[in-house]
Image 1 (tube, helix red, strand yellow):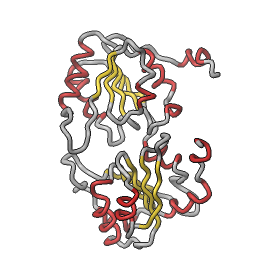
Image 2 (cartoon, helix red, strand yellow):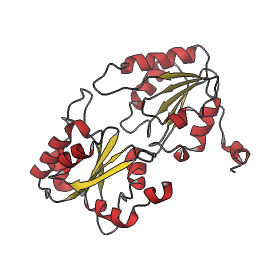
Image 3 (cartoon, one colour):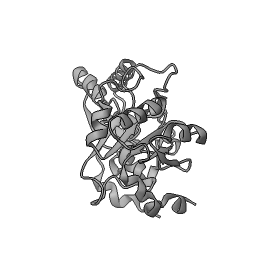
Length: 265
């Protein structure tokens, strides 16, 4: 049994009227930082994303108000401006506010926009980084982000932009031609087009790739396939969001590094 009192000296006080933007990591509660756990234990109101693991949400006190502001693709969801206004309003009420976000608040997480709204409103805040899914999710899938023999560069890319369509500012062909390992967040709706554009940029259709769904949770699923078959294989497997897509020679290392099923089993 872990003695949490040993770590109390590292905790910071979440003061009334403050907002802490906290990264919840990819799913496994064990990947929370000490500051994240401390924030949850002190929260008077928890404003959380839809995809934050329920076991993490449950770490807040029973007395804490829980507000789900998750954006669900292609369904009616709170606007970003509404979420930012809510954080400001709760802080002005003098409450201890935790804004709990999946992964890391500043990696495709709209944390920068929420922080700017707090600054403009004069609300004090703290950032608690989390393990982003592009790192933690790959580790739980048994796929190293880099190895000395495969790549010196990696790119993190979003699969869709603010409109919900395939990310139009991403030069997929250029990335495919120059970056050996690409990790794509939120790829599912545009997966077929992403693969086609990577192949058009010079990637071999037989190159290994993988889709990781519900990373680091008991529901984790990993489909290893090739660029030319990825969309069909993922559809046949019934994979749903949340998911990550990784392309490159590091995927082949899964045959040696795959550990999570045995560890969780």
